[in-house]
Amino acid sequence: MQHFDFLSLPPSIFLMKERKGKNKLGGLFSILFALVMLFLSIYHFYIYISSSEFDLTYYRDNWLTKLSKEEKKYIREPKLLGIVFNYLSNDVKIKLRLTDGENDFTDFERCNYNLESDPNGDLYCFNLYFYHLDQDKIRALLISCEENCVDPDGNPARISFGIFTRNLKIDHQSKNPYLQEDLYGDNFYVATDTKKYVNHMFEFTPIIYNSSEVFSTKSYEYINTYLNSVQRISVFSNSDNTFFAFNLIMNTHCDIYIRKYKTFLDTLATIGGLFTPFKLFFDLLIMFYSESENNSEITKNVLMKTEKYEYDLRNKISLEKELDKEVPNKENASSEQLHFDIEIPEKEKIKRKEFNINKCEKYFYCFSSCCKKNKTMKILNLCNDFVQNYLSVENIIFNMVLFENFYKDNPIKFKENLYLNQIKQEIEPDSYEAHNTLEEKLNNI
Image (cartoon, rainbow, N blue to C red; front, side, top):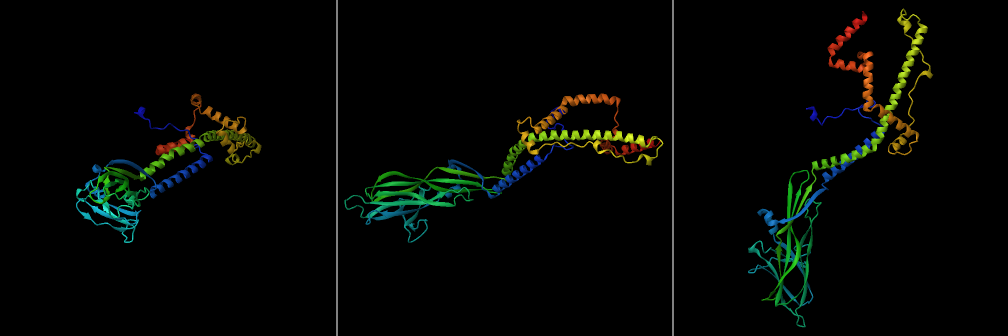
């Protein structure tokens, strides 16, 4: 089964007794990376909490088949309209007639430009029904001339009037997108021709707005209509004094909006999606520097261990010489005679040599291949070559073979290794203690 394992990680090489090669520049970039991600996380969570970002979808559909019977009533509701006249001939008298073809209705009144009831208003307000939805409630507005229908030259008098209704102004940022409404309509310039009348229609389009809710799985649906266009349908011969007819029509298609607020999981996905590119960016900034930093630190520590080894070796040799001088017969000497301090001259101590490398230069040269003759660059290249040579697989294996042959003639005492002793003690504590006791007894014999 081990051949199917593709999840296990390759073995790592530890640097300076650490699991990772760490340096101050890497610490600085890590802090910057954490601050950037913290800022982006706060920013996206603020967007999520404030509901200032959402996905919006728009398309058209047939509302007759899409909506339920209960929902269709919002579209079938009559429309409130207002009409205002501007008489071009002061002596023309106009009559408004609201009828369904058989009965006349008087449910229109004076109103202001907000389409609110006002006895002193300049407009007349009334309700019209959509003729193709409910045959029992067909209502049309007829405008006729009662007196002074012709001018002094015998031509039909001309008048101006406008018909307006509340239209929708969608605000996608608001919870209820239909909060803002404006008056919208058209102006007409017509002649009071009593022999024929012109039939106009206001064409309305339904609008359905589906919206999710923040911090919830619920959704809401807002249904309304808006004025789409004004159409001149036809001209009919007249049997009375009517010169203008007006009613409403409704499109079979509707505009559909779907507003979906970002969920908590969407926010986490967005932050997670930003994590990888930003981490890659900071990784690239530190990658070349870390390689040279690790290699130079490895080389520095190797030099330190080499110097320490040479120092210990010289110290041991000097100690043996002093022992030979002070205690000629070491085998018969007492323990007090063998314990004394020996001063090693300062000049014989090998101190660790610090690399004279400027950190700013080091960072710059790691990203640049120029200035190869610079002292800093020479040191870095030598360190890289040194580590690359001794850590290459073929050199490691070759040196292990040499060491194995050397070990056959010069066995190493593993019991003197601190780490191996601790590991063995954890694995077999009882046998380890018995083995140590036996060793002590043998040494005392």
